[in-house]
Image (cartoon, rainbow, N blue to C red; front, side, top):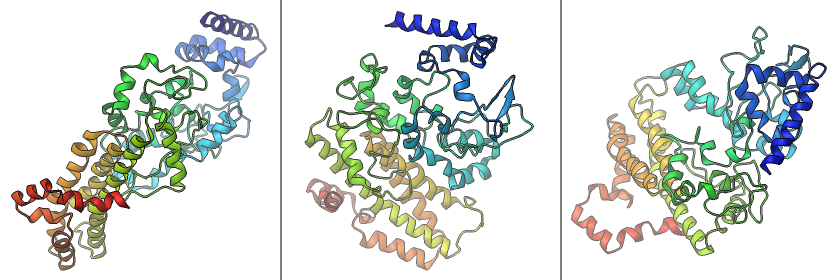
Length: 438
């Protein structure tokens, strides 16, 4: 098979080179083989080359397109958008367009981007936020390729393109190989899904799923078509396996939200739209390798942990922070110019997300030590004292009620020996029983 592929690609290359004098595709190849050898070889070894898809097929543009420019004797665009890819991959383009990934560029209007701009500066927002989330691509008619340097290069997953399309296919299928085998591996996702606020990469690596993958990479059959879990491979799942790839009952789908039943990104976790269907989609993946009882048990525990985060920490913290704003207690007017704002932000945006992602992906260390341990520490020993420091009667009344009347927080002012007895006799199990029964 390898020899057949090699011979076929050599023949394709030879045909195109022979047409170089009167064929744009051939001229592209001849020039780029000399000028950008790595780019050329990525393409030459790709499925695109094998199917005679050349440079001009992807980069060809009409003269009146916003980012079109004359390159030798052909109008082209440097930027290849999902709309361009959709010429040959219409179903994938439609799926991407309706996905969470396509909307990732909306962060440009959020507190995340605001903080990067004011606390750091615009260059950091470009390389630190837009590089993953995507930029609103700016056209510069004076630039050699009509793309402004402040927004190009950019392969952010939610990039807003001049043709109106959203997204960047090469965020996962990196140019110019556009390898589906690469996109199936967790490293493809880990450019963006890592770090203090959404450490999916780290959670996966510590989970048994990650353990199994990294010790069995040679058994993953990553180049298979269609790469059905349980059939084409069964050693381990990757990010793509759970969120996108085919099962015995489902086709692959580029909408990464089709199997997510809880939101773990915002201050509160809520069930997603059509969450029952989405959960069943994910259960279908799980049940390829796990029994029904195992899968049901995981979701039983996961649901309880999410509810615990919401009820014990997120809702009380949000109620207190809302009062702080409503009562104009902050000394400085700018967002994030006051210590309590940073504490509250990290409580949910960092520690709270880590706790929830750890629970979702069966990562015990991120559920507890990197998650709820830090949520609790910062809630009790930073956020609450900072709120009390305003010495406001309304705020303090809410805090006092929380520690006096809420059974989940009463432990804070009780005797340790009594608490240990309560743990041994099952009182704490009874206290949190409601989290499992909703």
